Length: 120
Image 1 (cartoon, helix red, strand yellow):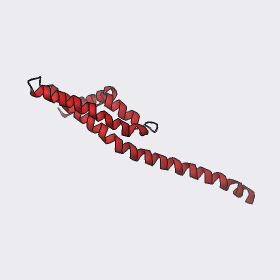
Image 2: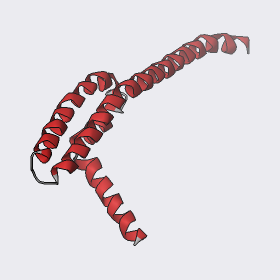
Image 3: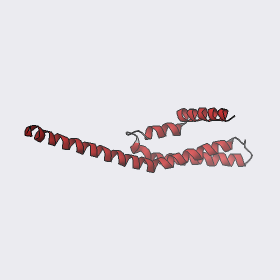
Image 4: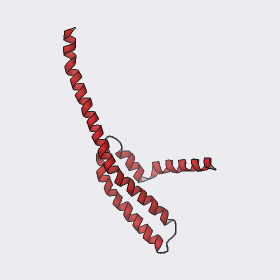
């Protein structure tokens, strides 16, 4: 039974990872080139919350019960969009610091090489 649940959850996760727009966008933002788009992506939480609100209203006024699932998925996606903004800022700062340190280190090694070669 646990094995069946594990396999089902793995398959659902793989499906969501490949085909859900929010997951595709988050994967693109987590790349070095995409980090700058994390804060503007936070604005995408608004349409997700709007769809969640409309679905909740429709479900409350006698609509089908499966609309509650749409509400949950939209709220979860909105939370992911809100969270990626601060996370991308931290990741971008860390990447720029690392790139700056690498550039500074390579500049320092280029300046030291001629003096070391001349002292031999």
